Image 1 (cartoon, rainbow, N blue to C red):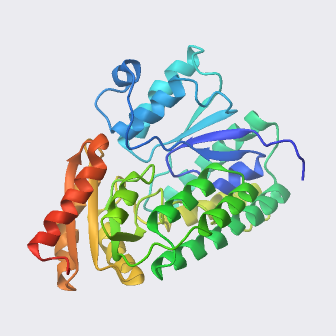
Image 2 (cartoon, rainbow, N blue to C red):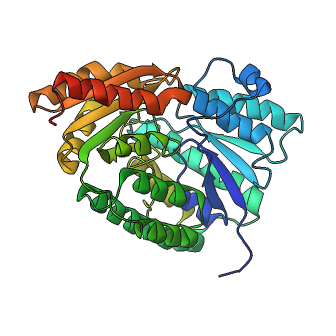
Length: 353
C-alpha cells in the first residue's frame, strides 16, 4: 500500500457508503460539529434558523478548518444538512471554498423505484469522488475497500458487545465511532484499540439514548458522572452509524445496486423515518442492550425526533421501561439539561435508587 496519504473527502451527514469512497482512493472524513462553541455571525446569517450543531459544521468550513479536503459530500438526511449544502454550493461557485461540493440524496424506504434512484446517486457519488482523487472505481478497488471497511465493522461489533456487558463506557464507544468515521481504516483500528485500553466504566445504571445525534461525548460524560451508563443509542454518530457494512460485487453497477438495498435496511433515522419504525427499532435495541430506561434529548430546531417521544413512551411502558425526555434543548445547555432530567426522574421514583 502506498505511503502517500489518501485524499480526504469530507462528509456532512451519515448516508455516504464508505466503501465507495475508499474504492475511489479517498479517506472519508465525517464533519460532526459540536455540542458547544460560538457560531460566527456569518454562519448564522447564511444558514438561518437551524440546528446549532449544523451551524457549527458550517462555521468550521467557513473558518478554513477543513481546507485540506479534496472534496465535500453533503447528505440530504436532515433539513439542516440540506440548508448547509445550498449555502456551500453557492460559496463554492463564488470561489470561497477551495474544493467541490456534492449533494447525496438517498431517501429511505426501499422498494424497486427508490433503490434504483439511490443506486444512481451512488454512481454519481463514485464519479464525484473519482474526479477529486483521480482513481476510478472498479471491481478490484471495491473488493479492496470492502476488506478494509469490514475490519472496522468487526472492531465496532466488539465495542458494542463490551459496553453492553459493562466493560466499556458509552463515551468511550462514541469516541470509537468517531475515530472510525474520521480516520483511514488502518488508523481507526489502532485508535479503537487504544480507546478500549482505558479503564472500565464501573457500576452504572444502563440507559439507552435516543433523540438527537451526539456530535461529541459532552452529554455522555455528564451522565456517566451522574451514575448513568449509555449502553446503546439509535443516532447516527453511534450504533446507527453506517460504518463497517460492505457488499461483494463483480462490477461497480452491481455494487451500487447492492449498496442501495443495504441502505434500505439501515436503522430508521429520526428525521427521515416513521415514528412506528423508530419505536419498533427502539424496543428491539432496549431488549438487546438490557437498558433499564431510555433518555431522549432533542435539540432545538432538530427536525424529527420530538415527534417520536409520545409513541415511544407508551410502547416502552408496556414492558415497564421508563423514558425520560427533554425537547427544544439549546445545544450549549445539553449536558446540564440531561443531568437535571435524570435527577427529576430519580426523584419521581421511576429510576430505582
